[in-house]
Length: 477
Figure 1 (cartoon, rainbow, N blue to C red):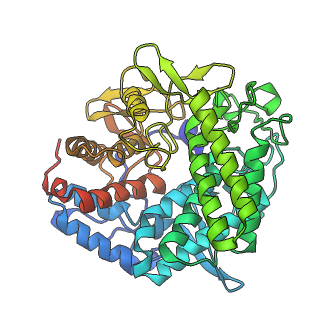
Figure 2 (figure 1 turned 90 degrees about the vertical axis):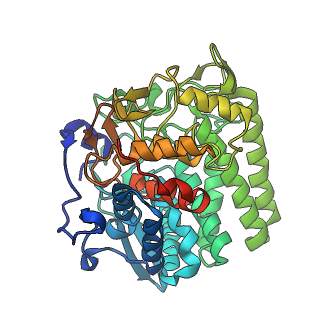
C-alpha cells in the first residue's frame, strides 16, 4: 500500500466512484443502497452503535443525509479495526482506510465518537481499551513516529534518513501524535472508570511523552530527532540537515511535521502546542488520581504552564488587516505564518480540543481569518466553501474543515450550511473524502478515509443531541 502523499500525487483523481469495492448490500431507506459491507464482512459490530444509527436516522428528514450518516458513522468499525486479545488484554490495530498502517492521530480520532457509547456496550469498551493498549506499545517503540505497522514488517519508507525500525510505517515527529494518545486514554478512563489501561506500561509511556516534549523544547541542543526523505516534494522532507528551520528556545515545543504529515515552515506549530498544554494537564490529573504520583503530576503541570505562557508571549500576533489573532507557526525570533491546516489540530479546532472556548476573542479572530479570502488556502466553489491544504494542492477543499467549522459553532444556520455542503460534495459515493475539487465534487482524493467519515458521523450525532430541529430540514442543492 502506498503512503498517504504518494497515493494523492500518483493516483488519478477518482470520478464518480461508488462505495469502497465491497459487495453490494440491500437497498436501504428511500431507495439509497447501503454502502456498508455485508454483516459477515464487517470487522466489528457494536450493538450500541447500530442502535444509535437507527435512532438518529429516524430524526433525519433528508434521505441522502440519512444514507450518508449510516454509511459513514460506523465506517471505522466496519472496515478498519483488527481486535484481538493478547496475553489476556485487549489489543486493537486501526488502519486509516486505504493505507494499511496505524496513525496515532487517526486511530484516536476514528474511535473518538464511539466513546460516548461505551457504557452501553462492553465489547465496544474492550475495543477502545485495545486501541489505548496498542498506542501505548507504539509509544514505547518510538515516541517520534507518527505511524506504525501491525508488526515488524518494514515499510516503503525504511530508507528515510532517520532512525527507522521495522515496526514503523513512518517516522515524522508531530506533537499531536502523542497528544491524541493522551486524549483517548484520559477520556476512556473518565467515561468508563476503567484504570486497567493506565498500567505500568502506560505510566512508562507517559514519562516518555513528557521527556519527548521537554527534549523538543530544544533548550540544550537540537535533540536526537532528525528526518530527511529523498523526494521531489518539498513538504515531505526537512531542511537544515533534517532538524528544521532555526528556532529560539522560548519554551514552545518543536513539531517538525504538521498533522497533515507535511513539514512545518517554522518549527513551533501553535495549535499542536495548545493541544500539548491540554494533554499535559490531563496526564497530571491521571497521575494524581490513579498513580498518586504528585511529583510527575507537578512536572506535567509545570511544562503545561510554561508552554501556555510561551503561546501567550509568542503566538498572539497582529495580522495586517485583521488585528490580533493566533499565528499558525512561529520560530521564537518574531517570524510567523498565517495559514491553517485542515487536519486537527488546527486554528479552527482550538475549542474542539479544549484549549480555549469558542467565544474567546482571539479564537474568533483566528476563525475569521481561516474562513476568509485572507487565508491563502481558502476556496469558494459551486457547492460551498472550505479550507484546502498544500497537501492536496490548489482548488481542493477538505471536508474535514467544514465538519470542524460545524463542530465549533453554536450558530444554527452556520451548522446547517456545513451540513448542506457536506451532503452535496460526496461525489455520489455516500462517503466523505479527504478533499474534493471546489467546482466538481466527483473529483476527489481518498475514496476510503475513515477519519473523515467518522468525524462526519460525530457532527451529525452532536446535531441530533443539541439541534435536532436541523435534521428535519431538506438539504438538496
